[in-house]
Image (cartoon, rainbow, N blue to C red; front, side, top):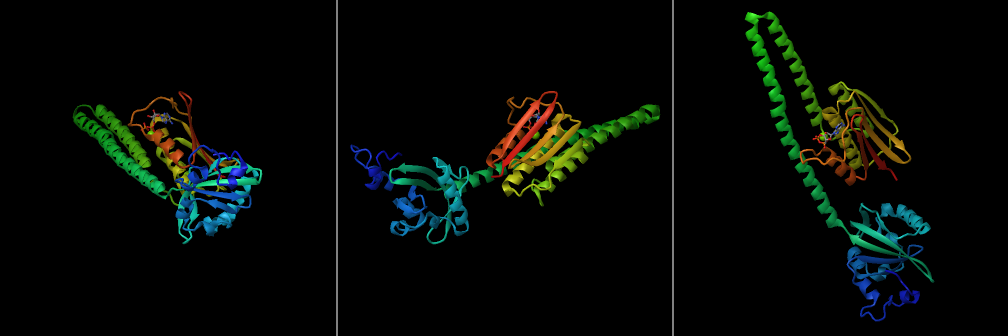
Length: 353
Ligand SMILES: Nc1ncnc2c1ncn2[C@@H]1O[C@H](COP(=O)(O)OP(=O)(O)O)[C@@H](O)[C@H]1O
Ligand SMILES: [Mg+2]
């Protein structure tokens, strides 16, 4: 919406004269709350939706600073953000992708999404804020995420059951057969029997390696302590299970990051290592987590056989898809770089400002 003539702003914004409803009326009955502020953050105008959302009458709001609508603990930082906006006023959604806290007259809080438009007219500079209550949408999103995680766990359980049955049980069955044959050989050829037993020993080592890999796969997806120590533990455990030379570099001054993002980083690192164990045939792996230009950067690199990340994959392969979904929903940027024959690098970036 533009205010073509500044006179109109004062007179209820009657911009289009032949239109039956003046824009001021449309604003009044708009489904989102609208607040007009001056440069000092003083509320000049609100519509009826704002009264409904916040429980104040418009007389109570007019003349108050907009921080009245913000929880007390966030007011100071809100003023700073407001000043920063005035310094560089552009039309923009506020808190894109995240919900902001708002405060009702009775002190209760709710989640809102706000977009801001600067309004420049002869009288000066104003700010028009559109406010929408997103409590219900957020609740539905949380519920959807919870169900997705539940489904993922269920599918994971199925897959593990099948892997144990088709993989490890088969392998143990083969060891049993080899030993039975060796037993029969004892009477006729000790040499054959001995080589049978040696084969069985090799098979048992393979089984142990595979069980280790399952255990690594199944390790708890939560961690206690700091993200740095959890990543170092993961690298150590990976090295022990796979015997692949694993180098880790995690700076000890990593900043605290939001729990959700930390868990996502941990999961993604785990999946990347799991993939290396299963697919890469790598001789060398490195895990790094460092701070670069206000970004936390986590990289998992292997020198294995690589693959084509752009190839389409069946539903059965969900690891990489989960990596992108999880990254996206936790504000992380992820880049999967792989060259067949050369190796793979998964890089995560979490902006910290
Ligand atoms: N580090 C890696 N090295 C080589 N190939 C990989 C690597 N990571 C993934 N891949 C390939 O990408 C495919 C998809 O991986 P993913 O989505 O995790 O599914 P899954 O691990 O269940 O096969 C794998 O099957 C494998 O072919
Ligand atoms: Mg995988």
